[in-house]
Image (cartoon, rainbow, N blue to C red; front, side, top):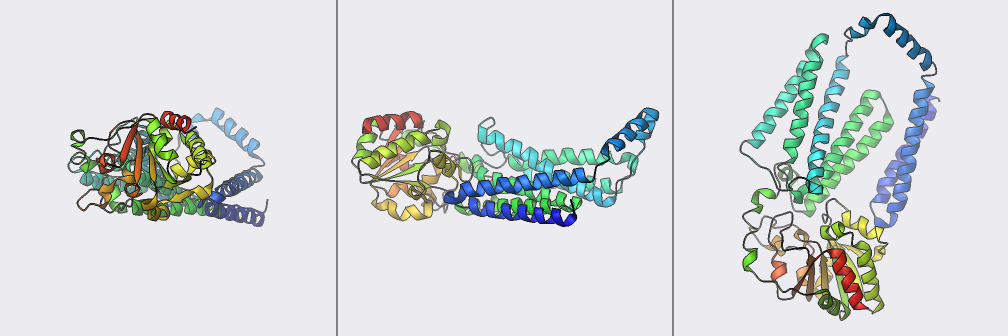
Length: 427
């Protein structure tokens, strides 16, 4: 395969990647975006494999020669092999970005899956420790550049260990509420690492793909921060967890109005308009199909049913959009937060399923830790039904005044079970 042919196929794959990102930007074109992404990746992988095999036609003879040499003189393989300085730099950058991304991703996974506490872990001198470790990592990197060949791996190994530790220390002070930003940030890191490898290998496909992943992850991080009224640096320097404990107190002294699935069905059946606000509780219960069936029954009775999506609802960006698409909810019934908020004041019932922080009116109160965070204004609806397993605080660790309003009815229980019971009662 000639260089011109490789460049042409890589160009086609790159165009597919760009069009895939464009398609994934909207639910109606997401399926097409996925197909284009698969086609682009298939082209890139197949062309790369063809390129490798075209340059290794005699690989069998090469391996045979290596095997004979190893049998004849095994000590020859212990001789030091010099590493060019440029390759050392690329190895250093790729290693520390990859190590930080990997260990940080493990911590993020643990927090998202509930295997470790999602609370922020903060201790005195934490940022100074991170700075010291970063400087030490750079110092060992410089030693790695300048070291003699027989000692070259010692500073590299120490540098790698520091990078793994730094990845953990960067993520643990970030609370669960900020995890969507962390996920986007780590995705961005992995993209830039791939782009760097592309430069070292002189592979334009890796450079383009890595740049697309890195830039899209960075842009998504910015969008998530804006959706939570948070600056990127405030997220990195510590999440909501540091202030959560002082705010989420006092919930036990308040009273809530509790109801049953039959009560909720009565309100929904007699409404003219209903807005459903899905949250992480819906995802845990896998209730999206039951919600779709319940909404279809309400619509058959002449009730207007719409869905309100907050950009950071759930555990990752677009989580709720994916679940509703899986249940085949029509796209014209799904509205983003800024598009639906203006109509909630005239909505008869807002049905909140497992959402908490994204509907918390404290975001409009000065002095609140989440003051200024855009929320779905469900509290403006004439009636509010909230389904939760318990009165536990959300990821921000804040009590939610919406739960104690006179027009709010709490229906406790598993989201899928409650929604199925509501659907049966509507019949």
